[in-house]
Length: 222
Image (cartoon, rainbow, N blue to C red; front, side):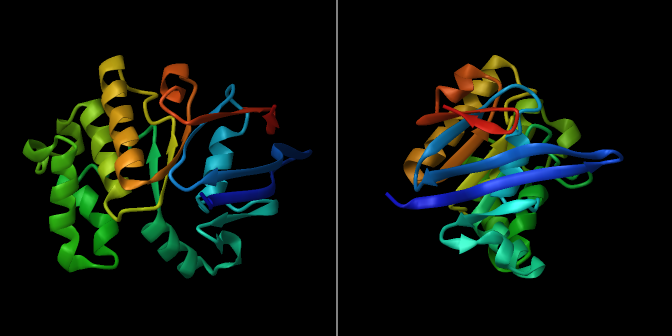
């Protein structure tokens, strides 16, 4: 299997009044096609920062990232945005659903950007697959936490991305909904060959993955 993600010597510094804080201190790693990987480590270890760099939603101070053979940070902003929308799905602990839109409308948004004709059909299909056929016209405030997270997953996968990056996707869920969400992600990984990277504090979540990577103080741990 070839690498779907390759990160080389990633350094990320954030400026402070009296210098800077170094969130990542030279991370090199790869993720294979179809692999499901957990990122574990204490708060402040750099998990979220690393995910944001792997997905091209933040820019490293040093180093670079390749996704499906494309170097993210050599692209222009518009090209990178299009590449992300078509190839990378993001799932966060806080769902970031638009409160004024229904579940269906929230999931349609990534498709509408480039292909309005198929947006509604695609969104309905993926929401139905995730057990939300009867919740299409409900707004986020009318959904449970587990249902909101499933809508967020639907939005992340509606464009059939090659990669899903999930940042504490079960952090606000009870054990039942955690199991539902992780089984959905595992199914997408196994049936659709989607490569998934999950940042988590939860060892049970990590056990769903093929491999666990540990971070501490911005460094990979052996």
